[in-house]
Amino acid sequence: MTNTPPARASYLSPPDFHRLDWACRPVTAAFGRPVYLVGSVLRTASYRDIDLRLILADDDVMIFTEPMRLLINIALSDLIAKTAGLPTPIDFQIQSMAEADAEAGTRNPLGISNVPGRL
Image (cartoon, rainbow, N blue to C red):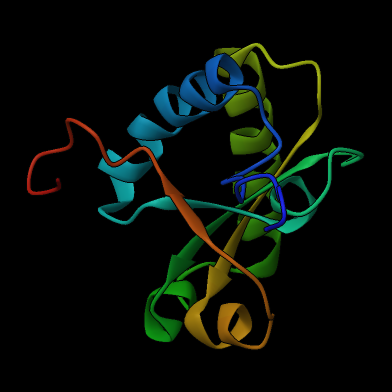
């Protein structure tokens, strides 16, 4: 019998995870889609930043020009970081479903509590 530690949902502390989840609720409510926690914070304690992705239908992403998408990504990275109060940088990005499906890895939905129409 081996004593392997249980799998972790992420390497954020529970209070940091809850603050991040809470900070993502307005974005989830505005877009009607959850923000996903992805990347190294799900795999290792030595993560450098917190990767967040808002995955939209390919056609929906087409309404954003590249400069507009970059501006929204930067603004929401800063807003979520300030709201959550975490010491680690936030890397928020809007992605099309095709872009998201091209990347392997786990996605952990955030901001879905207390959003109308969501569990």
